[in-house]
Length: 172
Image 1 (cartoon, rainbow, N blue to C red):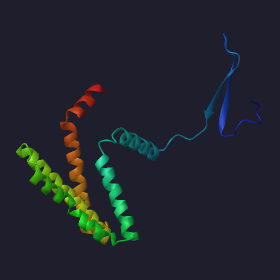
Image 2: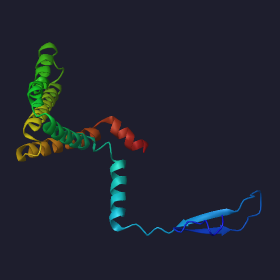
Image 3: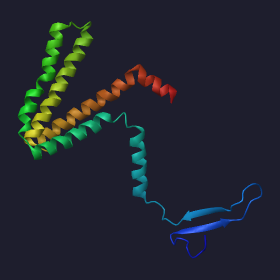
Image 4: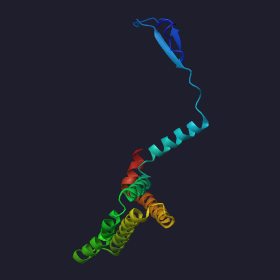
């Protein structure tokens, strides 16, 4: 590589031939990029941390995606909310049907099923209301925040209490 074809943004350093089987000289290209700024370092560190803990933050990612999707559906066709409102009662209906056909083995199982059904009904109702009124309304945004925080806390607690989470920590 001649000095005339060398890129202006990089410095090329030629290292003399070494003894042994190497027939070509080693060429080291040093970039002349400026050092990263504090903001870019912080963004890179945040991105690495978020990627490392991506499973722990899954509920928040899903909730954010639902927030954006309901906003888009509200802008495109807000009358979809009527269909979604009918579907909002489905989790409670499924819970009642299961309760009538299958008795839970313990009081704890019955309580967990009731909590899950009521939470799923609340989320489905929020989706229907957000599509009709817009997810950025103050009351709906507050409900989204509360539901997201509750889901995130429950997710983290459940991950710490299950044996699979313990085996992941021990293997890492």
